[in-house]
Length: 180
Length: 102
Image (cartoon, rainbow over all chains, first blue to last red; front, side, top):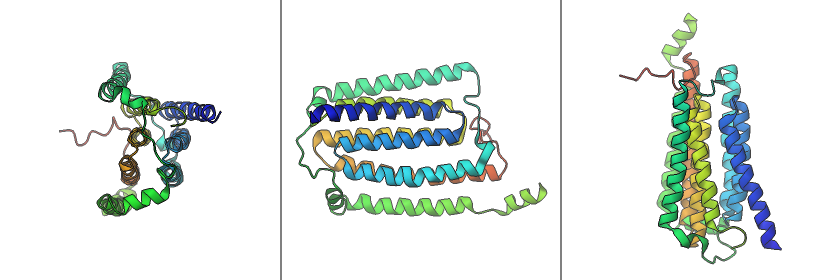
């Protein structure tokens, strides 16, 4: 009974995930694309939860749906109508090539993973209930993977400084605005 | 393991990655290209998490967490560049940006 319920939730989340992914790519208005991406990230968080990654599911909702998407929506609102762009410019062979390239990539990934892992994929290891809990992730992050933790903090600091530098108005831009 | 085994997760992850690639290749708006990049990063995260579950090892989850932090940094810089482009009155179209072409 419990297994059937998990399957139902999983199939719902997987289809929501793929459907909203297609919606992100196909909406002309970037505001709707960003809203569809929020749905995509939320359904991915459900999949994370079903793969016993509890902490990551929470982080996904907090970091992506909470922080990153708000930033996206602010920028789209700031740009207003300028954010709208044609769906796909250029000749039609570019679009056909893009679809062929994406399909080829999909086939390659499936074939390579199938050849490399094969039957082992259907036989997951037994894990205890605490697998992927915040306590476990925190313990491992601060012991075995301390270097990754510290490097992450430096990357975030550099990104914050970069954001400030890019957001600062330069002299050339001031002249451009006065001329306009 | 209750529910589907990791191979199902990997199939969803591969399809999602292809959708993201399609968005990056097809769309002209730099904002939508960034959104599609997020889809690709998240599909990679899903693959990492399903492999972590497959092997019963936390390393994949730690890697996914690091990818999440890198993705957040990438969005900050990417959106900063888009706003700077808009302030300089450049067209927000990745095909129109060919100043650096030799």
